[in-house]
Amino acid sequence: MKIIKTKKGVQKEIARLRRQGRSIGFVPTMGYFHEGHLSLMRQSVRENDVTVVSLFVNPTQFGPKEDLARYPRDLGRDSRMAREVGVDILFVPSIEEMYPEFEGTRDKGQGTGKACAFGRVPCPMSRVTVKVGPIGDVLCGASRPGHFDGVATVVVKLLNIVTPDVMYLGEKDAQQVVVLKKVVKDMDLPVRIRTCPIFREPDGLAMSSRNVYLSPTEREEAVVLSRALREAASRIRSGERDGQRIISEIKKLILEGAHASIDYVSVVDAVGLSPVRRISGNVLIALAARFGKTRLIDNITVKVHGQ
Ligand code: PAF
Image 1 (tube, rainbow, N blue to C red):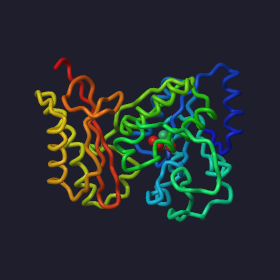
Image 2 (tube, rainbow, N blue to C red; image 1 turned 45 degrees about the vertical axis):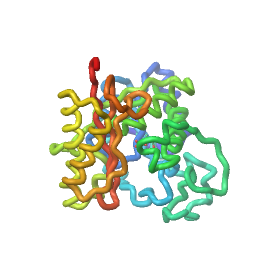
Image 3 (cartoon, protein in one colour; image 1 turned 90 degrees about the vertical axis):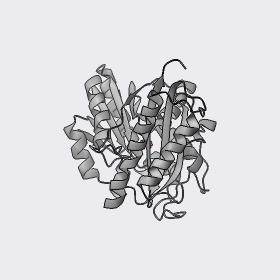
Image 4 (cartoon, rainbow, N blue to C red; image 1 turned 30 degrees about the horizontal axis):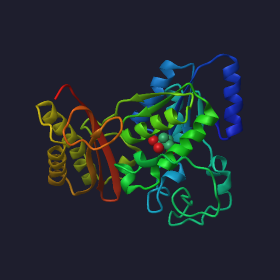
């Protein structure tokens, strides 16, 4: 496995592989790999000649009070794990490599201590960014304004650098998948998107790099999220069609089972993310809740046939 730190280095390597007619799969990540990431990488390795993984903790998708500075990082461990599953290229750019206009603004910090999350706070430079519009303002976007513009901007940049045939995304970030599918479609980007199911711990907790922040008690209580979603799905399968009742039931279960504060619980149409009052078709039940300082997300999709 090659570890490459520069855009030019990746582009040169991709050009060489393309001359040999190789297909390229791409997994964008922020590192601190878990089985969820590895499942995306394995899928890409199975389906493509070459797998490229990017590891970049993207400052523009973090708000000024979010966890950019403390986001878990361990390049040694990550590169071992990526090599073991058969990744060919690990692209590990610096902030300056991805955002050259950032040069010299480090430690003007804006509350993060380390880096200015300049997608979401004023910064002394201007640059072109992707604006995803209203689809980025609902669910997670409501409490993380600008987050999906930051995600879309970095992913478009990464796609332009790596030029993969297929990009692999995890369904745990359901809104991210919907937003990035729309970006790819609306901007005519020549890449297919493949999604992989949520990877869960044996007790049901969705795997996330942020799970390491949880205290033992929070970790134990966090299982309530997946349990509440499963129960909601089963109520829908047994005939419940009232979106609001499902939301109330999930909130009740979470608050009874954990010392958590709920950011949102929503029942939305799985394609356009618009709220669903009367459940029918393909619905996404998505939620976010805070356990101490840790914000966790989870979701489940339910298909309802007929009325
Ligand atoms: O899902 C993530 O880890 C990030 O949002 C992504 C897609 C790598 C963009 O920074």
